[in-house]
Image (cartoon, rainbow, N blue to C red; front, side, top):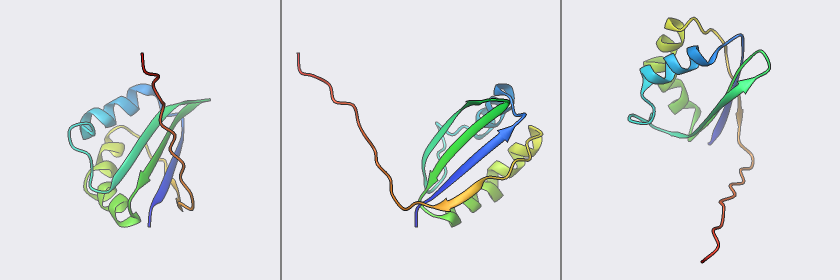
Length: 97
């Protein structure tokens, strides 16, 4: 079952987020089961939203790679996790010249 994870990371900075993503090299080594990773600043911190094929895949990634990287960056936030009931993806349409 597809799950979503929302990290509402109060006090986390762009530098900490970048440290973690550089260490994990997500663009070169996407974890098994990760569908999407979205991140951006929020008031007083950083937000990350992820979609996963299963909770087991997300937990394996956390146990094998992410947990240690977060610890090294002094990030201790725990995500909200919920099953995805609906997902709508809209792609942009380009006009023919």
